[in-house]
Structures are given as structure tokens and as C-alpha cells.
Length: 320
Length: 258
Image (cartoon, helix red, strand yellow):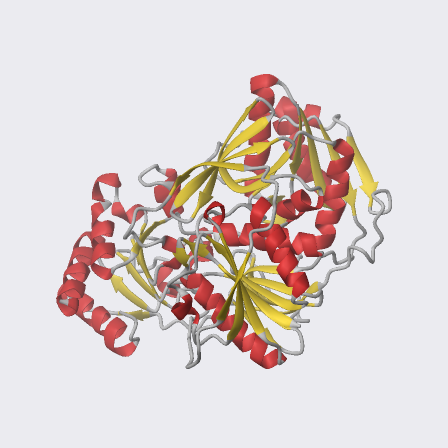
């Protein structure tokens, strides 16, 4: 019997891997089961220390250059087999683009249910996941009866909170033989140093109020000052001002940062679906009746062309 | 070339969702239902392939009789026929059950390519097409923003956080579609009329060799609630300089978030 956490990596362990480990530790403690982990990637070497304090007994490490990038042909059988070997009762993964594909595929192979993109999970005699439905307008408790119960957690929704404790034992595993059907021909990765939208602790988003692509630097400047990732509303993406990868909303990215700054965004339902689980929402809009003010924690009614540069300057000042 | 497009009928998320008195479901009266928007992109992609080189397109869905309306929409866009996996009203089916049923329906059609939206906008679960692929032991790729077919292979751009993978998959394969790949067409009136006459077969779970027990939902919603409404809604006044100073103070000193 075991709780199993899937440690996502992109070269290095991703922050969401530690968030998943944190949630898994609490679930394992409540269920009275040991916690183990699977790592699949090029190499875990030098990163073991990051895994201390999560109560992980053992990491089953599948390390190989050919495993550095996700492939469902390679990853899915590994996780399935480790889950069976350990008699896993609970499997916790991350609801990233690749993590969701992995979890769905493993769930199918094990013939079990999966609460995908949950914002929390706890043990109450069984696994209960908290999951937004209908564009986040409803929050559901999903009780999973199938065994193992699977959950993927939305990045940033659970805090990675290591406690005192040793680094886990690492058991290196030989790469199993797999026949790769899909072939990865090319990868285009994020520019180093750029904060990834779904994992950012702070997100600054611009909407129609920015006026046009020629003014977008106002959003980028504020984001840079705050160490934030840049997001955009659907209107801005549809108008072609920025790439759709920046879109926050139901048909875009779902983010849960510590601070979300909405600049010139009216706060349409479609946008809310992508940001309503943010911890603190700051709104800047010149329309005092904008919907976003009903949703925010702190609002400034004003012209973003004045407020954003002033806010950027103030942040730089206090951080200097 | 034969393409299966998986579509789901979902409530329009612009609707008002009220928690039902049992606190385990939402009030469904008055909800407007639509085809899940990503599935529309999947349908459009199939039709583009059909226009470019010819293909038979079969639209597959699972649900009650009202799903037929959703499927006719896709037929009006250009799909040739439909297969509805009809399930009794009131039967709660989990993702594993849905995937088993759809996989069985897809297998009967033996398509070269299966397309679906990257997620359905009711539960945003992003898991049924991936499950169908795994159950049928087919290669698959999710969140695809570009799709090219050549020599019995699909070459796709698969979006990841802050980047993309270009992946080559041998056909038959399952691909889930991201928006931005195309602009779904509005069906023209004559095509809407024509779609009404296109064949739409209904199969039951029994026809597919599945019992109600085998598809039973093992992930039940045991409680629903409205999301948090405890936002401060504090408008910070004063001139710009004062306002930004106060917001930074609040974020830094009160919230300890900056």
C-alpha cells in the first residue's frame, strides 16, 4: 500500500512537483500509508535535496536521456507498472499540459477515475478532490471510489511546504523497453528567465483598455517590475495584439497566482474562469462600474496609462 | 481517410449556475446547451482535411437524445454521419465509463484519425480522448495547435507551458485540438437542412458490450458550492501616486505577497 506522487520535471523538478509532494504527504499521513514517488527524466542528480521534508520514503527514478521529454508511449507504462508494484491507493500528479495527458492516460490503463485539474485534495476515509466546474462558477467535492484514486493538482493551488526531514532514498531503475510510436521531432521551450504564466506567483494581465499592441509595453513594464508573468484577456488575443499562449480565461490558461493584476480588463465570465482562484486580485480600470471591481480585493479606478507606470515605479522603489 | 470527431454537449458556461437544494448538483432548468467550443475546432479541422483531400467524417457523441441536436450541428458543418451512444437518463457515468463506451464506438468505425477538443468546458477534465486512445492502444497527442497529414502520419504541434513539441504520430492516432488552430465555420442554412437527412445511428451500451455497472461513476460529486465570495472589494482612492503607494503597502505589509 502506498500513496504515489508523480514528480514532474522540465530538466529540473518543476515547482508543481513539490506542491504535489506536499499534498501527497498530508494525504499519506491522514491515510496512514507510506508515500513514494516516481521520477522520469534525464537525471535527478543534485536535486535530491529539494525533495527533503515531504515524507517521501523512496523515489523510483527512471533516468535516461531519451526520457528527458514527455512521451506518453514511454511514461505511461512506467507509472502504471510502479503503481501496480507498490499497490498504490492514491496517485497525485500535476495538472500541467503534459501532466494532464500523463494522468488521463495512466487512469485509463489502470481503469480508474481521475479528478483532473483539482485545486485541492484531502483524505477523509477516501480521497476527496476539490474541483472547479462550469468555468469556475461552481466548486465541487469529488469523492473517488476507484482504487487507486487519482488527482492532478492545478499548479500554484497547493503550497509546497517542506517540513524537517531527510531527503528520500533514491532507487535508480533501469529504463524499461518501450516501443515508441510517436516521435518527438522538435522542441521549442520557453526562453530562460521568462516566468511561465501558469506557475507564476504574480501575473499582470492586460485587456482591451490597453488600447492597442503599440501600448502593450505598459503591461510588460509592470510585469517586469513585479517579477510577474504577462497574461492577456481574450479580447486582446482575438484582436491579434498578443499570442494566444498568453490568454487567461476559460479558453486559455487557468492561473492561481498569489497576486493577479488585471489592467483594463472588464472581468467577463470567460476571463474570470481563468483567474478566479488567484489569492489576491488587483484591478485597474477607468470604469468604476467594471465587473472586475466586484471580483477584486483591491481596485484602483483610474487610467491604466497613468496607474500602471506609477505602480511599476513604486514597486521598483520598495524593492530597491 | 476516415475521421471520427468526438463531441460533447455542454451547458453554455455564460449561464447562471445555481447550487441545487441537495447541494450535490446544479439547477439544470433554464440552462442553454451548446457544443463544447474546442470540439467545434476539432470538427472544423476534420472538415478542412476533408476539403483538402477527401475524407469521410463520422461524429460520435455520448448522452441522451438531445445530443442529436449537437451532432446535427457538426453534420451541418460538413460531417457525413453520426453515431450516438445513447445512455439512459439519470445514469451517472464516470470518465472511465464514457471512454470505454466511446472507445467501443470508435473501434467499430476503425477511423484513421480521431479528433476531439482538448477539453469540454463543463468539467474541463481533459481526459476522455486520452483514455479512448489508451484503451484502443493508439498513439495520441493533446492540445494540438497545428496538424498536418502525410504518408500515413500526423505531424502535430503540441502546446506545452511556454513552448511546444512537434510530434510525429503514425496513423491511426488520437489528437485533441486547441483553439487557434482554425476558425470554425457557421453552418449555412441549406447545409443545416441537408444535415437533417444525414444518417445518425443510435447504439446502446449493450450494443457495445458494456453493462451499466461497468460504466458506473466511481468519482461522484458529493458536494457543490459557490466559489469564494469573500473578496475585499476595496477601492483604493486618492490620486494616482497615493493609490499605487497604498496598494503596494497593502500587498507588501498586509498580505505579505509582494
